[in-house]
Figure 1 (tube, rainbow, N blue to C red):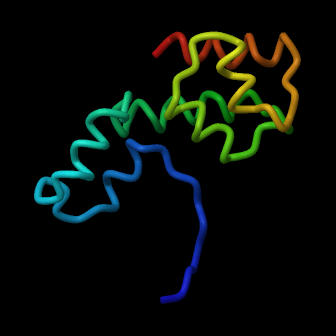
Figure 2 (cartoon, rainbow, N blue to C red; figure 1 turned 60 degrees about the horizontal axis):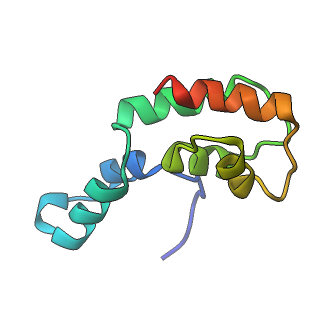
Length: 100
């Protein structure tokens, strides 16, 4: 098998790539337990965070933010520990996340 493209996906987006998900109980249970947003909402949130045009945020960070839905700066800083967000940057991200 050859990997043609690597794109980080949220849990909600991953569901669309798994055939016969209803027949795969373990995966289905996992997505139901940890998937906090629908595919549409996950894509919309991802786009809104991207629209901040924060050059520090990589696609991997954005995906984890969407999956975890951090409620405070501490949780957000755990996700983004390698880039060091300022207070203003963290607040902008959290304000968007709180809308969902």
